[in-house]
Image (cartoon, rainbow, N blue to C red; front, side, top):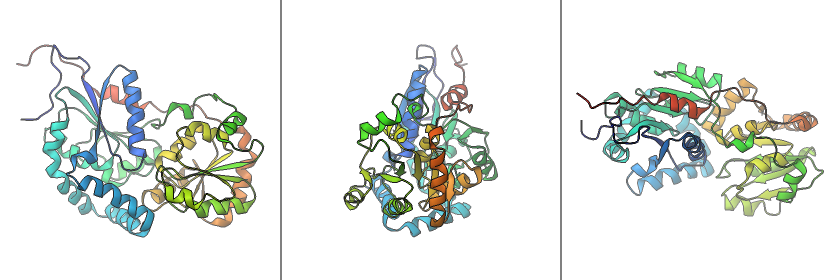
Length: 375
């Protein structure tokens, strides 16, 4: 069949390549793809990166991204309703799959002939690639890494050979949601520096960011877009008197300007989050998949508070059941929880992680090279 991916043949690189499909919508999907690409390259594999949104015709690619950002920022109730509706209705996922069908030819054109495995870190990609795999248009195994703790139905598709999740509850959710392929629990795809032995002491980390050396600090993170009730969370943390808030606004310039005179410590975009987390006594997050996984990897006590709509609340539900973080459903619980976590903050540190490495899983999924000419 024209455009079909075939295994490597003699005379080509015996390892072929891995294509990692992500999307530049927020930072979580791309960050996971970046980390996986780095680990696979370290194993000697060739990696191609593909932005799923680039398959959509202009200006639709930009429209999808900005509509999503706009709903999160200005119409959170609308995003929450849409997330819930697509989670309850199988027909909505079928509609998404049908909408993406015209992109099949473009996808085939972006996949090299020597592709040995395709890995997705964005759910919509599964709704395009899964049917292509089922139809025989792709012969390479299709693996997906779920960037959230909650497994929304848009992650699930026929044709996905292997699902990778970061917690046992996520695995159970994927199986209950109809995952046809195996589901494995893997180590989160976050930068190894979060869990690495401290390069800097807490004091040195604070000096790097101009933070007070003796104060109790609560780091408030809200993803790359600075989405959610960030200002309210900062004010409520300050009002407890337990800790000084350190607020990361990400790329949200409007939020940064709004909080510029806030009595706490306000930062814009931060390139060195592992060091900043090391400077904090506790992390307060709103159930974004990436930032929560980074905080947990760093070993810092973590509070889930005022989760963002949609996937944030879905992640918070899983986190609450797992007790990975301290989930606070009511503002009245903020002060006692902060007090409790601050009391044991000095014992914080990354713990050994015995989950399998995602790069190992992908490497195992690559089929062996068949030497000799077909026929």
